[in-house]
Length: 307
Image 1 (cartoon, rainbow, N blue to C red):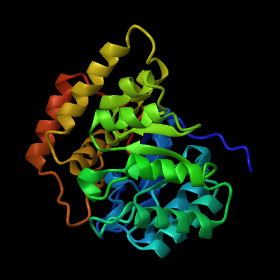
Image 2 (tube, one colour; image 1 turned 180 degrees about the horizontal axis):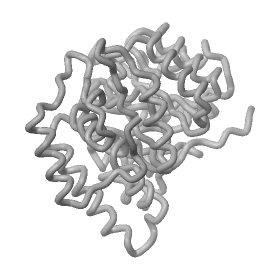
Image 3 (cartoon, rainbow, N blue to C red; image 1 turned 90 degrees about the vertical axis):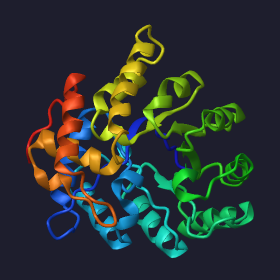
């Protein structure tokens, strides 16, 4: 088996820029990802806040190729590859592994509800077996508030025991700290537990977790990464409170349009405001109010410039 260093730290589901024709804008995405890496945040492209499920597999493959062709570090990449169709998940996963991505973030198939653990186990097992590559590192994605299909502790344990070299960790976006704590307490060998929000980052680190994969790391990356690096220092509680304050403001608005409005403002690039239907752009008055609230907190995105 290859000696693979599993991911730790702070990653973000990178928001996806679209042009006036609602097509993914690879150039803007590369630029944003390069900035995020400079802020010590990894790239969980094609996550929930990337509008991943509004994009085709082909579009995601093309974007991933663009990131790699631009020389961005694949050791910091965890693209989302979980789709409803087994063959789509397999195609995207194989491509990510072939490019050398450090891991993939994998939703369970999420269209059918009330599916059994046996069915979910089979889905993951088929992808692992058909990929057939020891380099495959799957980070499970547990987000029942959105997917309505969750991953039980027993299912996770079954997968870890069957595929210890391929099941690398999990992003817990349940919003339920008790669930995250239960995963940490299981103590699966080298299994990396990521919180789905920086709101739980300090507690996750105190419990022996790996970090967080957070939407607001799109806009507040350095501060979130700073807490990850200093979670055991006396300033950690205050840092967590400051992070919670910024997140609370952003969460007053629809998350994806709000994140895009913030980036658009700091880049002075209105193209970043565009979301793909069925989402709608944040109205101008709401965007102005959001930026005013952040300004009152002294919020900044250092190093971000117009493309």
